[in-house]
Length: 112
Image (cartoon, rainbow, N blue to C red; front, side, top):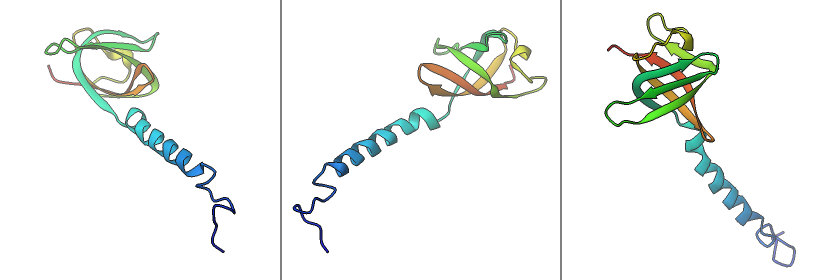
């Protein structure tokens, strides 16, 4: 049996337009939640107690404060945690933007 406007299809009740809007909204959020970005620079400060890492890029002058969590991975010789980082050390931070915070997924030490 074919549904007609008299029988009340989903389109007649506005369900399809709502689903389309919801789908577009979810797709627009994907880059914010799934895409990791990298930032390379020099350590300005590393506060293990606060879980904060501040890195600046000399070329661009950009300065980022990263949140370091228990899930943050560390790569490099003698680099196992935030406490092992020192001021002036060159690092590359892979991070995700979550709301207004930059959350470090991985911190790798680079040769100077």
